[in-house]
Length: 115
Image (tube, rainbow, N blue to C red):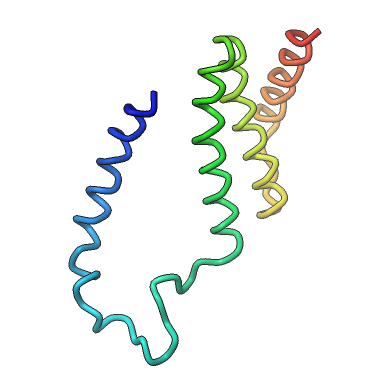
């Protein structure tokens, strides 16, 4: 499982380096004397998203290793529901009625499976 994750993430890093190679070599775009750095523009909410995505990347393989297939089939929809709730808090945009109905069915099925 971990070898597959490393194989897949290799291509992400490869293309990230290929795309940003030219900007890494030139420092004309970034003025180091003004205090600007490569981290300019990364806010608190960006770090929250990075941490949530990192937590998801650990949670899904742990679910596959220690849980059964039914538990895994609930982990993905539950992560979608939690992400939607978090985006409601952050952006104030509420999901539509069909999404709320689907989220209700996901939560109800999890409750029925657990009892």
